[in-house]
Amino acid sequence: MSRRSFLNLSTAVAAGAVATPLLTACGSKANQKTEAASSKVKLPTYVPFDKVKPDLAPNAQGLSAGFLTYPKSLVQSVAKKPGDGSKVTVLTEMWTAPPKPKGSNAYWDALSKEMGIELNAILGSDPGYPDKFSATIAANDLPDLMWIPPNQGIQHVAQLLEAKCADLTELLSGDAVKAYPNLANMQPAHWKTAVVNGKIWGAPSPYPAFGQVYGGNPRVWGKADGFSATSPEEFLSKCKEVTGGKTWALEPIYVNAVSVLSQCFGAPNRWLQNKDGSLTFWMETDEYAEALNFAIKLKKAGVFYPGDPEMADAYIKMAQGTIGACVHANPKGARADIRAIDPELAIEILIPFSAGGKAPKHARHLGTIGYTAVKKGSPERVKMLLEVLNYLAAPFGTKEREFLQFGAKDEDFTYDANGYPKYTKTGKAEVEGLHSGLATATTAPAALIASDFQGEAQAQDVRDIYAVEQKLVPMIALNPTVGFYSDGYTEHYPKMSTDANDLVNDIVAGRKNISEWKSFWSDWKSKGLDQMRHEYEKAIAAGS
Image (cartoon, rainbow, N blue to C red; front, top):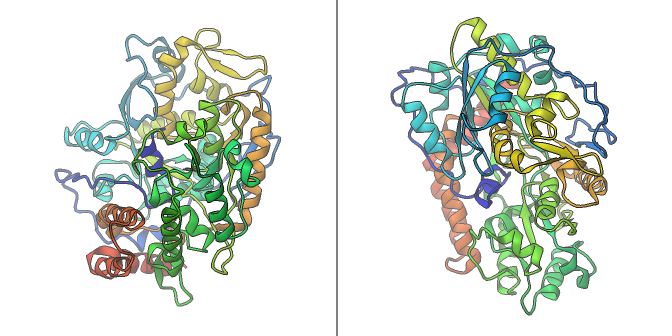
């Protein structure tokens, strides 16, 4: 995953979501004020998949299931082929190199046969998915399945859904979801992002529940007694201690540094719900301002790498020891990202410390990176497309999941000495990119799986990250607006977040003064922030 895509998917108000004009030709007259309706829908019943037992148990707070070995025998999760032999087109985004195209890709043909459809995929890439999405919709030949991310600036989604997509509420709400067992394996937090206008519009795209963390190279931080701290003063001191020669303590993506450090100062997760029910945006809070001031101190101390805040090779430089710590989307990603560069390097995770007299918090991720909507059609076709999505959501330990992720044994993958699947050259070229796109559309809830890590310490990686998650669970802060809808958010948030991020970078870099921070938020109150705030307040009150 590129640095830009990481920023977009992480919990931070991150780099440049593009506001994309969309759906001016849809002709929908859908009600713009939908915030109250979205609080009324009955979410699908949660029925955990129990045919494969994890070695480390998950919990409702977001602790991941952990699998220390690869199953010696796989189970079946789908009773029959989901398709009816027709062509099914999916619009989605991939996060790796494109696969060999359909027609010259044997795995693509095999997957189509396995699913009982003629699979066609429009694979967007990063950056550029919003443009790909808009161009596809504007062509007025909608794909059968469309992945809709919540944070890439795609606008007028409610109009698209009402005009062109199938309302799935009756098919998925409550116990109805049990007809699709792999979709029923998703928790309520996953489904909330797929609710608009009080209706369920798609299958979620699950993502780890834990949010951004600092990952540190232990070879760098060893001289400072490890990558940990109990206070801002100790953290600053350690950063100074490891900075010198050709090494700097921190990568120069200032906005993400402030995001992670704001957790130490007790900043809320996106929004703070006050005792009277009113909401305060996290960047407006004193806690965020304290973290911004602390980042200025770090900058003045010279501990940030003197490079481009949008640098694409920060992880490589960290693996090499030039940078001591980088921000990662989540704890698992931190360990896996660097193992992929250096299989012998076990990244350490910084557990939020207490700063400013406040108890540290950890911002829980939305739990998804979007959802995949279904094009309007006959009841039979809509149900068939839900069966396709149910197949794509097959959990770890199933035959379907192995085939989706790795393809055919011997041709696309082989088992290594530990029994883990590894791509062959053919699998790398044909399977990996297509699986990346299909897993974006929908997949099983996130888990810690030994085979996801490179190197020889895969089982230990699972134990280590599970232990980190256990430490973070008591600190979890929830976003009170998750599951509620605001038209102002879709309209104004991309511009607001881009402007805020630019100002954070300018302030930390010394190009602007921190005195401009409060006035920036005062100005934005009338430009969309108060609209978001009041719409979310009304929606939450209506759903109480």
